[in-house]
Length: 285
Ligand SMILES: [Zn+2]
Image 1 (cartoon, rainbow, N blue to C red):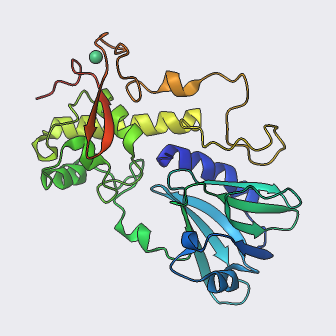
Image 2 (image 1 turned 135 degrees about the vertical axis):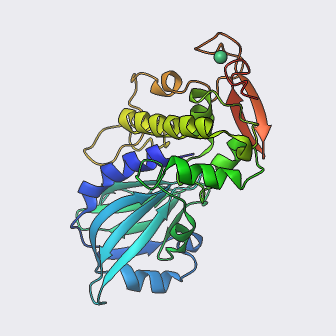
Image 3 (image 1 turned 180 degrees about the vertical axis):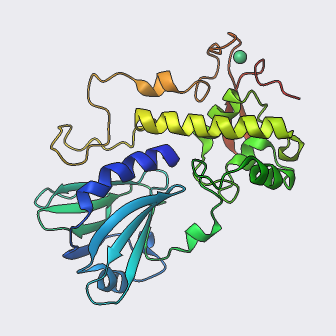
């Protein structure tokens, strides 16, 4: 599932491609993804609008639009959910089976494809209001992080998935950050010392920065035609090195030796999600 780094990589890719383009037609094939407004209201609002830019907040893509008629700016909030992909295709290319929303942009079209329909592309921006600070921004301080953790009895791994604590971390980078900070995933959030919180904050920032630098960790499954056509291709080119394996130190490595100490990595289920950790290096209680 895409987390902050994957969304950031996608935003940096999409922004220069769509900026300045006008939405000429709107096709909504899955009304659920644009809820709560109807396809009719959605189409009316965005048809004729121009993309002013794409940015990121947490795991959301924020599309800034300049509406054709309405005064003032308009925002579209995108979320990839589990399997969502957003990319451009030539206007004449056939639509993929699971295209949920398609925005005609003249010679190209913006496609939001989602096989499982947990993603969103909506005018409702209220989801952003509940988000905590950006982990790579100046608001994410040791003091603020410490105060928020002290209010929680949840295990630290589970708490890190709470988007109101810090925005954009999901299951993969929560495990990775705890490994780097050498903290047991089961440690109750409020029992972390100030020093441990400072170490975890730094680990989070480093793990996210490195992931952004390397590009997407989790392939977003867009196979497309399998050919690079100058438009969006979000998959691994055939024969490309498997960065996914190399870059993750504990995630999805159960039974394999810890890169630091050689102890087999363990998998444990916490709040119905898999946690991966080294029982030797992360023995912080
Ligand atoms: Zn280890």
